[in-house]
Amino acid sequence: MRVFVTGAAGYIGSVCVESLVAAGHEVCVFDNLAEGHPEAVTPPAKLVVGDILDGPLLKRTLAEFKPDAVLHFAGRALVGESMRDPGIYYAVNVTGGVNLLEAMVGCGCRKIVFSSSCATYGLPEKIPIDERCPQKPINPYGHSKLLFEQILKWYEQVHGMVHINLRYFNAAGATVRNGEDRKIETHLIPIVLDVVLGKREHIAVFGDKHNTPDGTCIRDYIHVCDLADAHLRALDRNTSSSYNVGTGEGISVLQVIEACRKVTGHAIPAVIEPPRAGDPPRLVASANRIKMDMGWKPRFTKILDTVASAWEWRKAHPKGYAS
Image 1: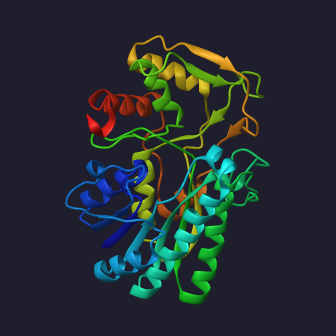
Image 2: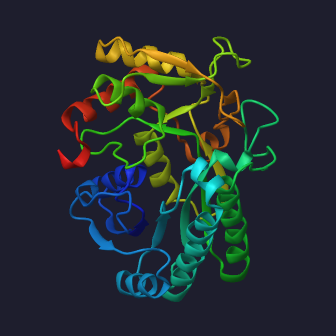
């Protein structure tokens, strides 16, 4: 297939492009490089430097490439930033997304796999979270993702746009080629590994009195390679749907830190700090729907293996892609 991928010089997108190229697909990457890296794009995928807020450039690029399908990763994704500056989240995640859909309509492409988020659920009413749970986002980031999911339904009704929403939980891990390298890092595992690399003195643990076995927050860590596999399988779908993508297993903050200690052989001091407002104690996925519909299942089910892959990449790239 000819696959157009937005935001694919970033973390998850770059691993998906790596998998697309390995599977023999022809790939065009569209990224403004605000957080992405040209080195992360696997050859022979073509990189076009551009912003999804530039509607005319999107239309010209898609008209020239003529994709069979689109994977849409581009967007803003920091919860805290969205609370400080909601406007940029609605501009990029919603208006930019509509620009992409209009360019797709113009070039006759009618299939999109959307990088959505478990943030659309907000504070879940039950654990594990399945796709029937009410979507009640509690921040502009989650709301912007939900708005675009709703817009996709109208584009299906009006233009026949098949859309597959993949709602991620906590992406983690790395391939040999691609890993996490952001200007502002918010993911737990790379932050913990920064302590090992001497970039931080300790890891901050936000609260140890949550209603969980060890008092720290529990999350579902899905390996980025398993996310890539879900995207490739979604390309074969011809019916619109939404899917949670997670392992179904919850790992606490302290368990992640201990896994990092075992993998790296470093002590990694942890400091307990006050809990963050609005931090759900547990976020764990039910991924039964994607397993049934696509035959997908996670290959990385042990946090030690996920941490080990991230650590191998960080050792090889101590300064990120710059090294």
